[in-house]
Amino acid sequence: MADINSLVEPAPAPVSPPREDAAADLPLVDFIELFFFAYRDFVADPDEILAPIGFGRAHHRVVHFVNRHPGMRVTDLLDILRITKQSLGRVLRELVDEGFVESRAGAADRRQRLLFPTAKGEMLARQFVGLQSRRIAGALEASGPAGREAVRRFLLAMIDKEDRGSVERLIERADRAARARPD
Image 1 (cartoon, one colour):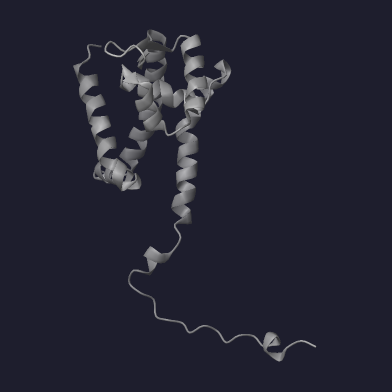
Image 2 (cartoon, helix red, strand yellow; image 1 turned 120 degrees about the vertical axis):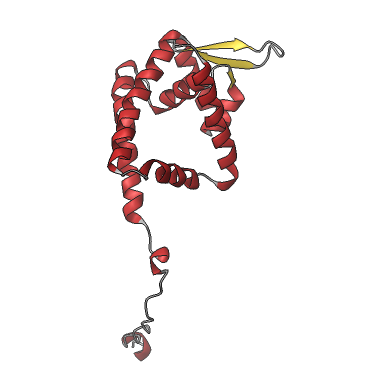
């Protein structure tokens, strides 16, 4: 026979008045989904270019960062991408074999591997940046006059706090180097 207490509905929980910061307690599922859809579309154009040559998103990221930081060490790229050495090794081997990236020994330490984009790699990276810049520019324009700085602050805040400074320095260094390079 069932226990009578298990058959009785529990009393409803008391309803407390809404707090001013109640929105902070709500799951941000709408933003999570917007991130998924925005990322899907952000990478769709490069995906279309890469698919016919058998490359994927890891190849895209490697080409992007090697182009932005010519001469970067493999270990630095591993830190940026946070992928396994084995995964990066496969992707790099394919990019080198297909002529998009060049791997050279370091001048001071011959065991060190430095990565450089080839002319073919630079062209591919510029193509990706052009496509993705147009998408971002359109979204920033739709965000209004203060949108660019608000989006920048938001994206930085999404990065783990202990990584923000190094990410900002990495971007600033690449921007300075890009401005200094002759076109």
